[in-house]
Amino acid sequence: MKVLICENSFDPWKELTAYEQTLPPGKTGGSVSFVGTMRDFNDGHDVSAMRLDHYPGMTEKHIERVMEEAAEKWEIIDSLVVHRVGDMQPNDPIVLVVVWSAHRANAFDACRYIINYLKERAPFWKCETTRDGKQRWVEHNTKDPGAAAAVKKVVKSA
Amino acid sequence: MTIKVRFFASMRDRMGKGDATVNFSGAKMTVTDVWQQAANGAPMPESTLIAINMEYTDNNAVVKDGDEVAFFPPVTGG
Image 1 (cartoon, rainbow over the protein chains, first blue to last red):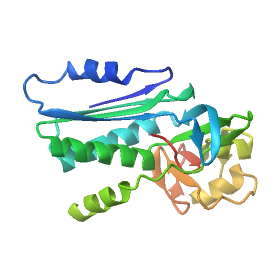
Image 2 (cartoon, chains in turn brown, red):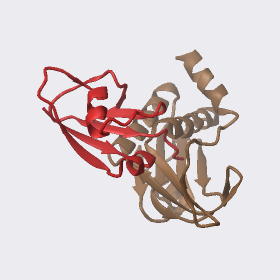
Image 3 (cartoon, rainbow over the protein chains, first blue to last red):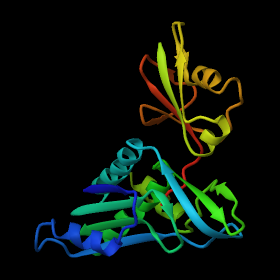
């Protein structure tokens, strides 16, 4: 299990491949990955740049906790989260979540759990610069239509 | 009793500072007491999230000497 907070741009596929080399050979049946990238629009405005702030220490702690919860709920082999902070441009990767498991269902469920709970609990904040040069804090994350169902399922099975 | 206070994101902008120190000589101090001193009486926004020593809590929690109390808006990562 690894959490990496990056101040510079990162290549999700290089991170995934590099970490995969550390896993025990022959045990993994598959991996599920989620890559979040920066949009050039939000809430009806064109967005030209973004800065991501975080709370060092607390951020890593709560992402690790979410990953541990996922590992308790589903049979997985390992997981990786890489998250950007600092200044970024549209199309830059913001977050990478990867889960490896012997069977795909566990990897899909655990990956969804980690990204959904990361978005709810990990202390990051987005500050956007719109095309007209104004800066504004993003007040809430875009709701994932499937997230509520996933959360309900987790609560029900707990 | 000395408490380290941290404000993040829009809360930092609103307060005009990212850090503060609060001193208290009474027997018991809650997060609400910390906020009132650190924010100079400004009302706490309803959506404020609170952490003591990097663990989420609420404004009724009691702090102890040396604690770090953070106030911040809803998180928007991922």
